[in-house]
Length: 87
Image (cartoon, rainbow, N blue to C red; front, side):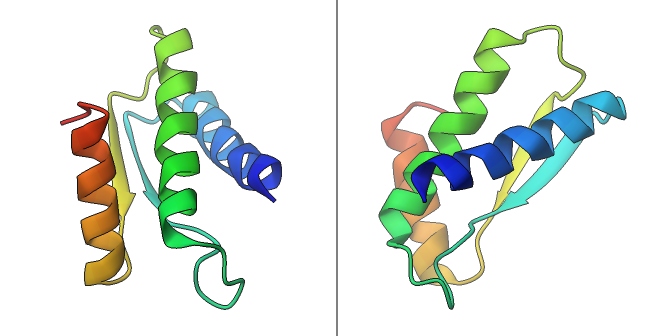
């Protein structure tokens, strides 16, 4: 599942870039009915997005908004992004 989840984020970014989007909002995936661990979902999402954007500095996307569906997801996202020095 990590590879499938990562591929979802890659596809989102590719489609946004193909449409010359300047920003994109990406929700935490797989943690609801799919039951994927929240911390792992956040790690996969943030690391994949950062990896893609770091390798494509000419990409039109200048802003990525990570979307949390509740306070627990918000805390996980905020904590991981701070650890990775993303904001």
